[in-house]
Image (cartoon, rainbow, N blue to C red; front, top):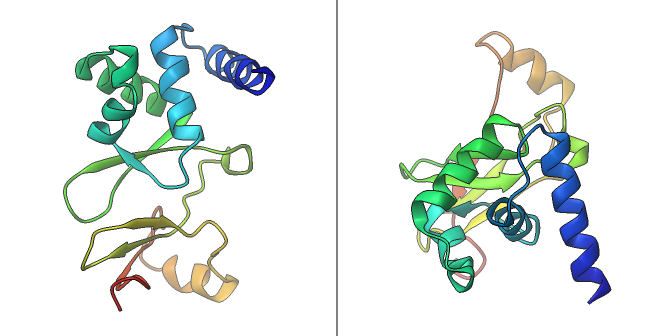
Length: 143
């Protein structure tokens, strides 16, 4: 029970510090994404919040409000579906991390431990500023 209270306190404080109004729906949405190890679609977030009887438009509006406040990141990973994930304290500079998408089963994995090398950054700067890296292949379950 203490862990649940601590998590809710963290979510309320985080939302408030971002300049958003603290609501039950925003707290629940932020906690769903904080507890996920992978980016979630609007439909997946809505399904996880179904027990709270939140309508999908409220969930969508809150997701986008939190993206605007830089609490969440929105990514499109090549399948025309937006996925949302929490921006961690280490990523407050809004630095993106790579994602791996299985071309067979569609599973999405965060690759937060992968960083561009100095040589890669220098080479990519010829094209502009890299905001996202997407790797496609077969996950271990589909190999």
